[in-house]
Length: 65
Image (cartoon, rainbow, N blue to C red; front, side):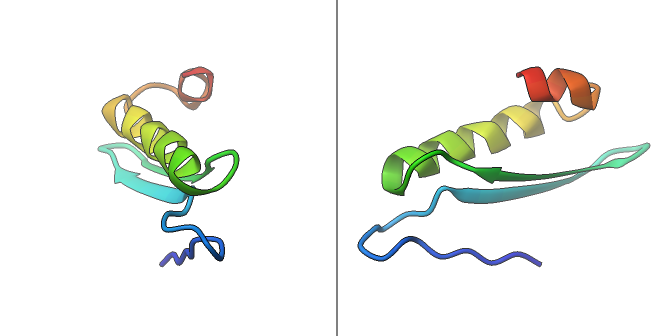
């Protein structure tokens, strides 16, 4: 499970997670977008999308992305 909460005064949080099952492993990642609010949320979601779209690549490649 996972839980998150936006900072007081913000409507969105920059905290995200991903659990992506693959044929030979499971990719688990936690993202914390730098800053607060909408910008942090966007950055964290972009990271989730990038990891999900490229989940079959080696972890070292994912980190560089």
